[in-house]
Image (cartoon, rainbow, N blue to C red; front, side, top):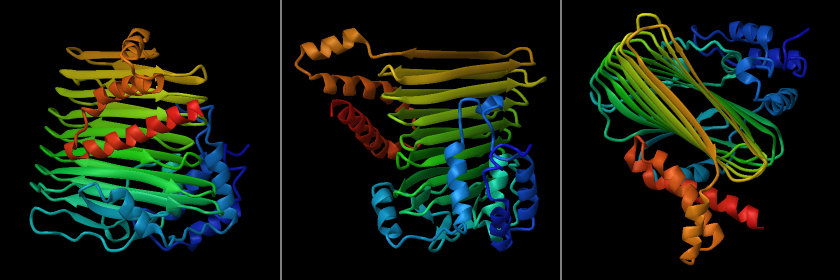
Length: 431
């Protein structure tokens, strides 16, 4: 029997699409990635980590896209759409449209600048070898390599906008970025995902991030895709001695969204803080899987994810922390809290701690509830309507995690996106 997800794909069309693409890098051989993918296929719900996440929609779009010739053109309106999305966010932006790098890349700007180049021109070796990463490597048009030189501290964040548009034809967009933060360097990165169009769509993004001794990165991922589109993403992070990784993820759109965040704490004194907020409505499925491996100590990791669910929707949060033998002095904290605002909303929350060392401090907590009736009554008694009262309380629930936003200049933009999403949710309910 063939692996799940392969029987539905036109194998010859897949091989033809891979062969038609130009060589990417010697260290990223397409045919080797394709061979690995053909052995394993798409992840199946029979796998423990995927049992709540069905990729059938992504498989269907991939099949139709391959059958149509695996074409991914850049729409004429992309530049205007990109400007509208990023105009109020101060950053040095790189735009990737329908899986293709658009326009010129920022050049090196002196000793304190960063180097952004095409992956096809970089002497790097991407290391993620998972089924979806292999599919990405086999079909990728080009990716990004970002190098932050030793001691560099750019004054502006680097923004990467992944913007997709499909009208009638199916589209698969494949994105990849390798980010190297060298010793003592500091940088802020904004990763923004958006899409529009009536055609079937699936986005596959792979990001590999390494932080050298004493380096730090503040990383914000914003996802606001069309509510009919699908996205999977994997972010793999390696932290060296005394390095810091601060991450915030906001998921608002997409019919199917799956995020995998893996953090490898390889040096003592490293610290990882990663938080997330997801807001789901009718027909949405948002899945966050996190894993942090404490290989040495002392080191600290802390995560908190919050969810607001309304209508017929489902969210998944699986947070795993593994304290390996010898990682004494580890401090690992997990938290997941959810508001279920309708009977059809469902959350599957699974905190996991595996501890193989002594002298550690680890804790986790998960809560699922509804809006406080006494707080609602208090607001209603002061003349606030039911919809406004719900919005005030849900926004307050979200605000407690938004306060942890590692890039402060994004606060207004993030709060605007949240306000719009909560407003749309309440408007749909009252319609």
